[in-house]
Length: 74
Image (tube, rainbow, N blue to C red; front, side, top):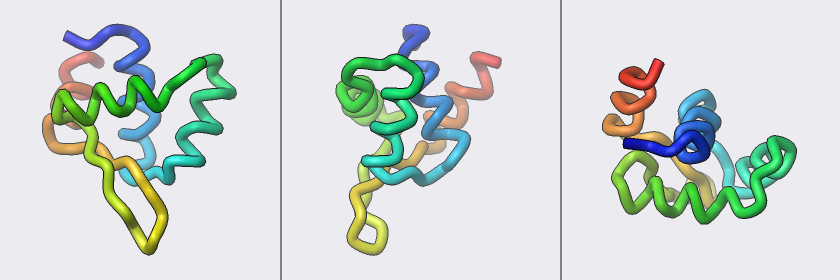
């Protein structure tokens, strides 16, 4: 089961499907998350998010498991 913060971070990543690391940091900072990257890393360890490099930029993308988790929480 995801915490509210984990769900919110997963939702941000899920809306974009692929989001640059710096862009994710900016969005999470605007939402009041201190260290949202720690939550994103935790989601990576849980298998809901994957860290990839797209055209040389570090990015996060939501996995199928992450999409299912988002769908089940709505």
